[in-house]
Length: 236
Image 1 (cartoon, helix red, strand yellow):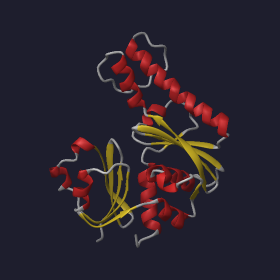
Image 2: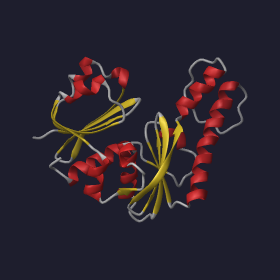
Image 3: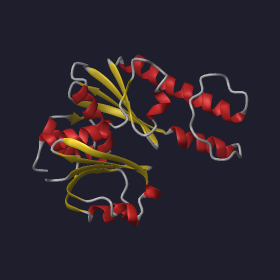
Image 4: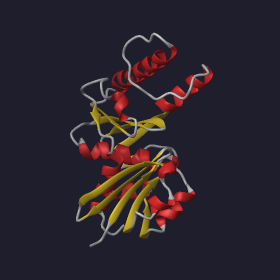
């Protein structure tokens, strides 16, 4: 039985999913410091479909565990799904961003205009109308912002935590600020681009949980899209 894996290699986390007979066998999310030689030995399959943000030596070791490695690029996405981008140079658009945009379009076919927020090390925003990616934004992620504020205030490294009440010390003030910054981003997208739907994905999705009940939270959107890609074209 052929073992297919999908892999999303981000700046902070490595996400893996093993698929057999179109059924997910296991899903793995690890931080890069956890990708040890012992961990790599637990991964093995016939082929892997990968989108990578970073080029790490550990990826090369992982790739050796598969008979076939296919890296998804913008051209493949356009050809398979007739999904276009107005980016000036599509090669400069991160494939993870394009996959998130495509995934939202495939899941919410009845919505004409969609905003996709990918909350990871960086927070990216994509605007999709019909079958076209119109462009986007790149913002420092919550943890990056919090680390910068903590460093400036000579505080220890802080964890992101939602807080919708006024802060009563430096830490809670920073957490409240981040919560309202995220909420402001959502409200601004609704107002400026008149989107029909907002989808949030990525490792820091939980920061958007209580902001607006109309938001669709899909943490593993990119992995879902990679799975759809593999099902559509068995030859890749």
